Image 1 (cartoon, helix red, strand yellow):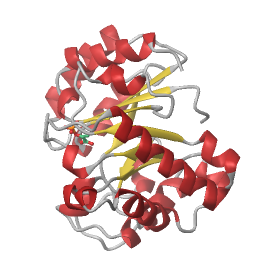
Image 2 (cartoon, rainbow, N blue to C red):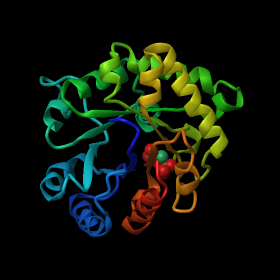
Image 3 (cartoon, rainbow, N blue to C red):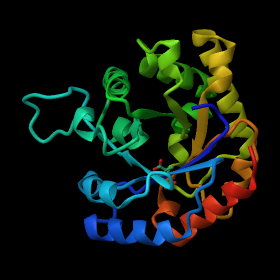
Image 4 (tube, protein in one colour):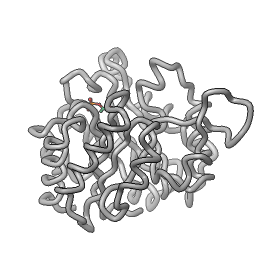
Length: 256
Ligand code: PEP
């Protein structure tokens, strides 16, 4: 997808069960307009995806899985594959900092997941970002480069078009300390410059790059107005349908 759409993604993490997810979707669907410049995506618990996939109007709201395993089938007790998610979700989160840091997912796991998503016609949202220590040591660019190379190894330039990158500084996720807009521009420009190096100028200019990290109803507009930001990945503030729909409203009015 080209950069003509603003993506607004709500990551509910391990919150809202099946019933509450369904009620939330019902509320959100009443207020979300079908807008050709804005794509709204929600990532509920994996348990709710099947129910929500029947309930949702995909022209209005799309679904994402928060996690999956990179093999398609087999003896992997407890896991869910991208093959199983195919037809139920349109997006998957890959490399979210909570997966990297709490569950110790490596670049090798992350790249296998990117491949699995693409193989199953699901758009991966590859999350990258530095920790507070790495920021303090002025290593942001290096960390982003390593995570991009690690996650995108084996991805062709045609496949790159299906990928969304989310710049999510680890220190900003769930902390209330959102990144300053100039720092977001700096990081996203570094991401595009690395992608240019890897895939050429056209691919780098066309890829959608989002910001995520403690975005609120009050701070959303400042990011959406940045020319380099193509949307937002929102955790905490997406748990309230009223706040989340307020952010979506802002995206309607801030034209790409
Ligand atoms: C996230 O979960 O990706 C996220 C950005 O969370 P929060 O908005 O709560 O910081």
